[in-house]
Amino acid sequence: MTEIQSKHGIVNRAPAELYMLFVDMRNFVEYLPEDQKSKVTADYDSLKAEVQGFSMGVRCSAREPYSRVSYVDDGAPFQFNVDFFFEPVEGNDHKTEFHINFSAELNLMMKMLLNNMIKEGMDKIVDKLESL
Image 1 (cartoon, rainbow, N blue to C red):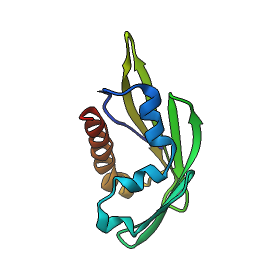
Image 2: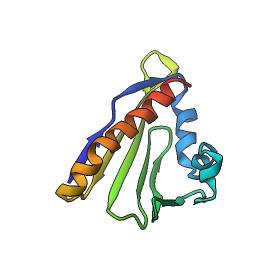
Image 3: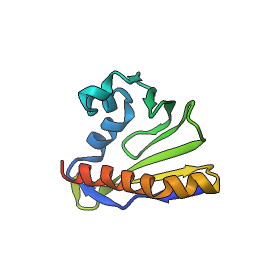
């Protein structure tokens, strides 16, 4: 099992507000560039996309209000799980400590190809949220 953890960041939003961004899969489509939106379909629980000729799906598997949202593969080329964590910052109700955990069954070749890209992608998500 390959496990990758993003860096931890402090986001200037309350945990409930940040949680709401991730709980509904349709929200992701809003942030895509216009030329990519036609390749993605989403409903509350799932998202399907065409990525470099591959059809890939993600489904929300767990929602713990204001603390965690989990996604699993749903027709992806490999099995994976992604957990988004939202923890209140002590002493400040309007800030959230945020991080992402990723785990997958990757063979050695896939691990070598994807490990750094996944880590960088997760860290970019944290950076983007910190700049909100």
